[in-house]
Image (cartoon, rainbow, N blue to C red; front, side, top):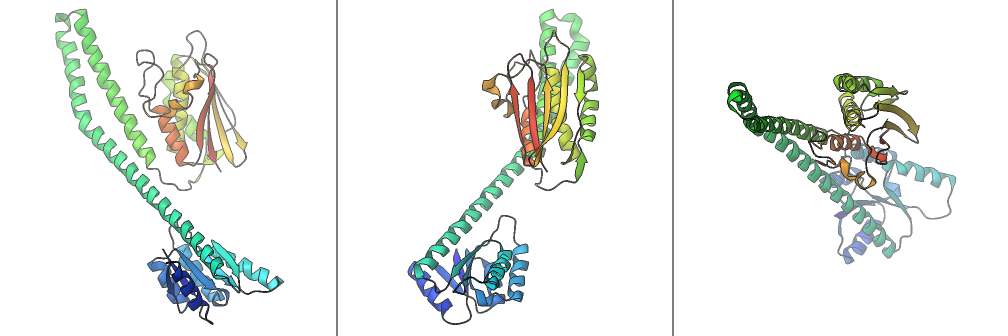
Length: 365
């Protein structure tokens, strides 16, 4: 957290260094642009530069250095400008300096308290950048740990689950005639429990994978393609309940096909699952432009979601109904939320019990 000073003409560098030293601020004076860039590379909280030192080559060298910095970094520059009345040339020069990004202009002669206040503000801003970096690193590590745990759990737990499933099948096949009704029910219960645990492991692994989606701009994708893929995967469920599905125009979005297909499949699958027993399932899919994002809507005429649970249902393992009524792991909406948020979007539901539900999710352009 030091301030690097580049003011090769006059006594500005000496005066600034002495003023900041009285406030116990760490300073370093660079004799030229090359030395300044080297000091910034070694580590600095801000740079104080006299305007006359910012020649065209100097500005270009700093721009090259800035382009090499990580996304979280936004080095503060405090530039000491010439005093006097504003002119067309001074406006042009100020615009050129904005190429450095985070720039504060201070007109000379500079009062010591003004310089100290500006440098303190710059150092605080730089400290916040490092705090954000630390949080990002902690989040990346947490996501890596989650994915590693999911892989380990999937590998270590599947083998005993497979043994349980095989043994229960053998018992039903070879000993069913010798068992009472209660014994067969218990074996079926064991088998269904093993199947549900396998499904839970699959969803946990999927959740871990989407947690590590890199924040990158994807190629444009026609949303109809992943939507059709999701409908193909749900063909049996759609036919089982004779669902009527209406699809509006779908936009082009920047999202990976597998991720968007997963969101569609989970939301449509829920609409098919949480249906009313006395009505034909009707699902309507649409999308519209709102400001700088595309807003998708998956509406149904199912049992709906009570207002008290419209936020909690997007959490991990959150379910409103026992497995005996509606099967599932409670991970589907959590996976949707994780995917959408990794693309800087959001997801929510609007519903009243017994009146169906509208699940919305947005994807920025």
